[in-house]
Amino acid sequence: MISQTQQEYNQVVQRCKDTFVKKTKDYGTAWRVLRLPSITDQIFIKAQRIRSIQEKGKQLVEDDINGEFIGIINYCVIALMQLHLTADAPMSLSSEEVEREYTHHIEENLKLLTAKNHDYGEAWRDMRVSSITDIILMKLFRTKQIEDNEGHTLISEGVEANYRDMINYAVFALIKSGFAEQVK
Image (spheres, rainbow, N blue to C red):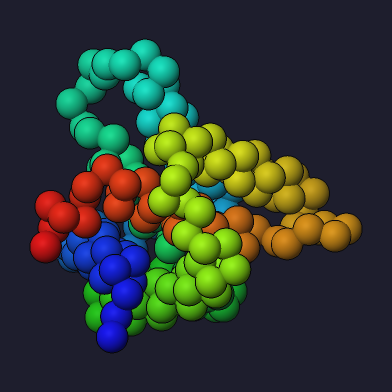
């Protein structure tokens, strides 16, 4: 039997994947030109906008916060794909290949989520969405520091772990906002 969390997680990431695949069909894989720090900065812009709206209590640009969390998820998946593509991989990838890679990385994230939920007892369910936003921003600052250190860490996990955590926290925010119920 699939848990409630897995079901909600799957609903959220399916919507994110649908958006990603459609954009791939519209734009191709133009994101392949982005270096990891540029992807990190795109994620930062989205997380900073979410925090700004949360703090101000209103927004002037119509794009909703849920769309920004979807963007965080999808840019993190782009980062994971870029990390794992070889240097000689083509700039242009088929939408089928992109969809396969997206699914692979999300499946890896679901394994991570399952393990962490076991150990932490789904503590995220008691968190505020604003705290989740802050954690995503913290992960971004960590990622930027690791990138500035050319990927070297003394004791910490690398950028991949941070991208994976950001995906899961963004999914949690969408679940908490009722987004999973909207996409059933």
